[in-house]
Image (cartoon, rainbow, N blue to C red):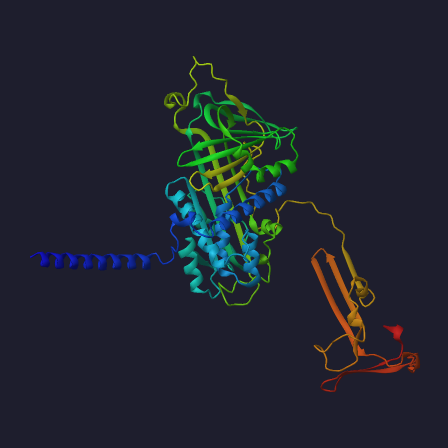
Length: 552
């Protein structure tokens, strides 16, 4: 009996093992593209390299934005941008791939391309988690020209690894496509859009839109009933009236005399926090940009302090045309006619790639706990104690902000509040520049020029082609050939109907004279015949007679 029970037990164990194995195999097949679970990011061997690359890219991007837009509100999600561009790299090859990933901060000499995608799994999972929990709205929208033959594996990888589903669209029908994209964007963003896309190039191959929205909810609310108008000093000449809110709370505080800045770190709901950095009055741009890199120094020297915090309500947004911005950071090849997108299509054509990032952040006085009712004894300052008065930190001039995830210490948003009441930034678009009504007065003109470049080119280092040693075997198999004449002519005609322009270049190659001093002299100073021959076929193309060269 005992033997039968043991046999039955052993059989049940085998059956259970088989069931578990089949379940695991099925799960593995279903999660084919979820190659690394979110919990593995801490132990991944490439984690530190990915994190270092993301931080370097974020700081470089922030400083570039501060340089390009010194008098604008700025808000962007560096992690979201990095993940979108890493997704795009799945379809790039050769120098385009190298330039893109190295521009994102990854050294391909010490890590493989697939290591980058491996490392980004935790970033993708974090953004998805925040999206599911309603702490932010994040969306990548990829549009591909439907007139091209697209590799299906790229579509699988983009969706499976990064969660980005590509949408095929006909860019040649510009007006219809603009309406379709704007409708799709408005639907996915859950907002009314007056026209996210205002212009399109009919030869566009790829359009990538990266959108992220964040509305911060304080863990401890500000005093809603004590909101008041107060001055915000945009600069030494500009002052605006803003809604100021305040509260007293025990928070992380730091002061750096070296960086001339004050920092506070305020908890938000959902395991997130916001770091606010207030530069001292009159700090130059160079010092302000250094604060971006030295934020970690401020955090290391921080401690918990009672702070009387006064700050404005604000809602800021940025719409950034990354096609204009990224080349200034060294990421340029992907936007050129030589870009290699052979991972997406084998068709060889100049590919036009557009990429836009829009970020919106809103901060009000609302919080999970009401300041007046829900503050417990650990967060209040009893009136009968002799505790030192709280430090007053007043954000009444431009300041920086950084939204962080407590668990991973990753920066989800970076920004600068330059003017809390400024209209949302909507200046970035696919148009090369803003169109304005202009009363233009321009003369009619026609100009042309002819240049003998054999006299100019040697001055800029191009000398070899005019020497006997010049190797012109790629043009002709004949020996002793040199370039003796390089001519260029250009003309432009501008009138009331429009502009016409044309240009032509030519060169003359002939055998080098063996002895120029003994060469016979031939002078055409009387009427002569002209015959133009095609050398290869020995065909006579033109026949003429010059009687008077000045007759025209």
